[in-house]
Length: 579
Image (cartoon, rainbow, N blue to C red; front, side):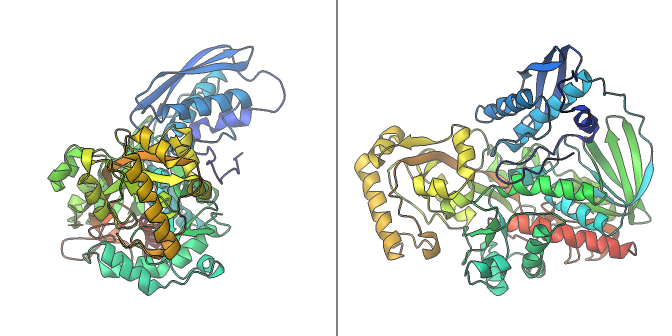
C-alpha cells in the first residue's frame, strides 16, 4: 500500500522494506494493533542517528519522543512534524515529510516504523545473508541509481540496487531547483524560445569550457526526452513549471507546478517506479568492493545487517554519488576549501574511487569542486536558486547589491566571500514568496526574517535603512525598464519589483555543494580506463562521474545529468548483457 501524495510535501515512501509488513497490519478498524510498552529505534539522520522511544498504551500510539539526535536546530521541527502525524494517524502510512528537511523527516519516520514493527510483533530476525546472482547490480539508490533501476527493470532485467544509507535518494533528496532541458513540450506550451544549441553553449560557458563536449552534447540532446520519460506513466512526475536559473540564457529549468522542490518530488516517484518495475532495492546495504573477473566487472561484495555476501552480476552500474561529505578528500583535491561546510548528505564520501582502481579506471577533473552560494551558515540548508530566479536579490551588510544574482555559482560565491563577514542576505517580498512553494519550507523551519516595510527589515538585519530603501527603489526601476544597469542581470530574471509587503530575508554564504570530478565515462556511460578503453561490464552515472560540468555546474544540470546518464547507463548495460 503506497501513498500517492507526491506533489508539495513528498510522500513517505523511503522507509526500509523490512518495515513494510507493519503497514499491512494497520487496519482501519478500532482494534488494538500494538502491544503496550515502550519501544526504542534508530533512523539515519543527516548528521547522525536519530534515536526515539515510542510509548504504546491501550494498543495505541500514545506518544513518541526523540531521545538523541545531532540534527541542526532548523531541522529539529521536522522530527516533531512527522511524530505528530504518526500519532494522529496511528500509522506510518500516508505521512508527509517537511520540505527542506527531507533527510531528517525520513530518518524520524524510519525510526518510528522500526519501533512500531517491534510493538506489533512483526520484527523477525533477518535470515543470514547468502550469495546470489542478478543481471545488473546498481550501487546507490540516488537519482541516477533509481533512474537506471527503473529503466533496466522495465526492460525485463533482474536488478538489485544497493544503498548504504537507511533511506533512498542520496543528494537528490536535497535538490530543490529542477531539471534543465531544452526544446521541450513544456517550453513550447509556455511560449518559451530555447534550443539545444543554446543549452550546450550555456553549459560549456558555465563550466569554463573545460567540460567534455561529447558528454555535454549527450546530456543536452537527451534532455527533452528524459523530461517526457519522467512525466510518462512509468514515473509520473510533474515538471510543468519552467523557470530561469543562473547561467541560463533562457527559461529551461523544469520543476513541479508552483516551484516545489524537485528532489522531494522525484525521489519518491522514482523509488516507487523502480519497485513497481521489479527492481530489488536494498537499504543499509554497503558495497565494499566491485568484483573483477579477468578485468571484467562481475558483481559486488556487500556488507549488510544480516552479514556479508556477494552478488554475481553480468553488469555493474556505479551510481554512488560524489565526495562532498568527505572533508579529507575535498582538501586533498582543493586545499582552499578547508573548513567549509557542505550541503551534501553524510553518505557522499567517494567510496567508488577505491573500488575502480583494480580496473585501472581513469579519474578526471577531481579538483573541480563547486560551492553553492546560498547556504544557511552552520546548518547546511541550501536555499534554492529558484528564489533568486523568481526575483530575490542579494544584499550585503551595507544595504547594497553587489553582484548579478543570476551569475554562475562560482562567480556569486566569490562575490559573497568578498563581503563583510563572508555572508550576505537574500531578500525578497511577498510576491516572490507566493510564487515559489519551496519558500514555505524555509518559513516552517524558522529561517525567515520578516519586516512589514523595507525600513523595518533593514533595522532587524542591521542595515543602513536609507541605503536599503534606495537599493530597492533602484532595483524596481531596473525591473520596470528590463535593464539592470549596475550588474547586467538577465532581463528574464527581472520580473518582480519587490514592492509587495511584507519583506523577507535569509542570511546565506557559500558551502561545498557539488564535486564535478569523478570517474571518466563516455557517452554510453561506460567506465573508461587510463588508456581510454571501456572497462567491460562497468558503467557509471551521476555525481560519481566527471567531465559533464567542467569547472562549474549550472543549477538544474545535476538532475539532468543523473537522469539522462542513469537511463543511458541502464540501456548500455542491457545491450552489454544482450537484453
